[in-house]
Length: 402
Image (cartoon, rainbow, N blue to C red; front, top):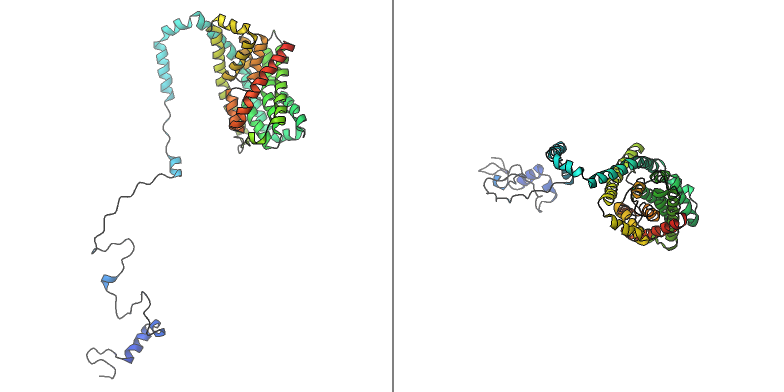
């Protein structure tokens, strides 16, 4: 047997075996006395199968696995919530069918109720107010949407004087040239403030535009054919109140009372989309308030006892205050409020003038829109002062012109 071999196994021994291991694993040749690198195994010594590491996710059959806890159901993501199907809308044709069926069943009681003199008077007044006011309402809404969409706010910023004391009356007179109902005047005023127009001038335009524009004055002339002085009185009183509120804000107003208005809801849309969106919005809101106002006028005319109305109308202070509060509550669009005022024949022209001056400047829907555009703190300060000045302006103007 050659020298250096084990007599039993024939394997090299001693120095020969060490040199052979060095050739097979050069890493051991750098540090013969140090520990072997982690994970290194000699080829002639295969690892024990029991010591092998199982791959991720693999369980060794020799070791029983512990039962895992059930996973909690994950909440749906934002996208999943957005894509969740909406509940189906109510079946409108079915509701209409049921309503018609109910009316057929109750046609005899309905006929007797509608044949009553009170209901005939109520229906006559309601239909008359709606037929007279609706064309002016639609025309005013269309012109208001066109002004809000196609006339850029930068036009007002360039046209108004830089001095606030002069910008206020100019902005007030601009309302006579550019028609706009209450629903459009608040967003336009907010856009003016964003473009750098002084708030005093923007507020003067906000108050004057719904009250003295050509559509409103024409509707007033149609509603009061025998009292043409009502048109001039409405123009003068509304313009005076708008300018007085603008000058008062310029004198006493503070910037921290008015929240910077956010961007208008039409920004980012094309002009055509913005025009029809504004038209639909204003028609739905103004039309709904017109129906409520016509119903209230018909109820006062047909249901309210005559002596109650006479008692309120005979006292000038009570008459003015009553119709001013009524204008705030009814929230009728300015293109249609003249026809409601004309139907209140028990009251004096000065009291009805107060109704026409107060309504376009402050009512429930205007208060909500002003609070949403300029902040609640602004609306809580602006609305009461506007209400008082509108009544004062109407009474003074009525005493001179009516």
